[in-house]
Length: 111
Length: 115
Image (cartoon, rainbow over all chains, first blue to last red; front, side, top):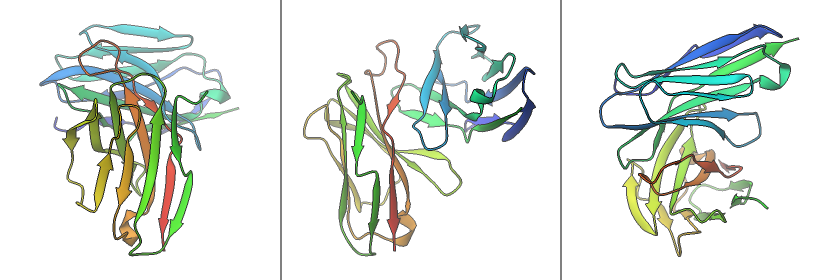
C-alpha cells in the first residue's frame, strides 16, 4: 500500500445502529495513525492518535484499533446518533513527515 | 481563544494577482503546515515548517511561497494566481514530530476563488 485509503467512501446508518469503517496505510516507516472528525463548514478535529501495534483507544461511543504490521485501523461507532454525521479522516504519519490523509468516510446518520 | 486562526476566511481575486493567507497558532507548537483541499475534497499537504525551518515541500508550484517569521506564524503567499489555485487552504499546527502526541490542530480554512 502506497497511499492512505479509506473505505467505504460514504455510509448511511440508521440512528441507534453501530458501524465501523477502515483505514489502510503503508506499514513501512510508520510513526503514528491519526483519526479526525470533520463536520461540514468546520475544521477537522482530532479523535485519536495511535502509535503502537494493537493500540485501542476509546472516546465515548467511538473507538479505534490499530494494526501496524498489516497496515490498517478500524474506527467503530456504537449506537450512532445524528450528531455523529461527519466525514471521518484517517492520516498516517511516517517518520518526520507531515500527515498523509485518506479521502475520508462520509457518514450520514438517518433518524 | 482560537488555537489556530487563519485570515481571511474567504478570498476572491482575479487571475494574475498576488495574495497572501495568514496563519497564527497560540498553542506553543513547533510545527506548522499548509494543506490544500482539492476539488475532490482530498486534504493534501503542501508545506511543513518546524521551528521556522522548512521540512516538507511537496510538489507545489514555486508560485506558492510559505513564510514563517516566527514559530507561531506560517503565512502562505501566492504569486500570479491561476484558476486552478481555487481551493480551500487549511493551516494546521502540532507538537514537534517525535515528541509524543502530535495531533494536528486546524484553522477554519480559507476558501480561495480565482476568477
